[in-house]
Figure (cartoon, rainbow, N blue to C red):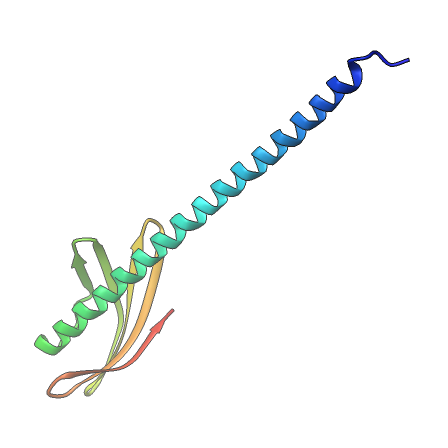
Length: 123
């Protein structure tokens, strides 16, 4: 015959195990969501930096009719390559890295009396 407190003690242990498993699952889910959010934020920053560098390149192209291989911004450095110039047409790729996340944009523009953007693609 079972002891009088055995069923109550067993029930408490089972409920405790279930509560601990639910808590661990919620903690792991929270950590995964935080990591996803951080990567998403860093990706947005890298894309914003690449877009800023493209704008800087277009300004330099309009002003100097030349594209520098590197753009320096307060938030970091962008590499500009390859540069293809076919008369008035220009094609270049800007690459920006923020916290190990790299974003690249390939841009096509024409330069006559002013620079006209003809293509913009995220790689």
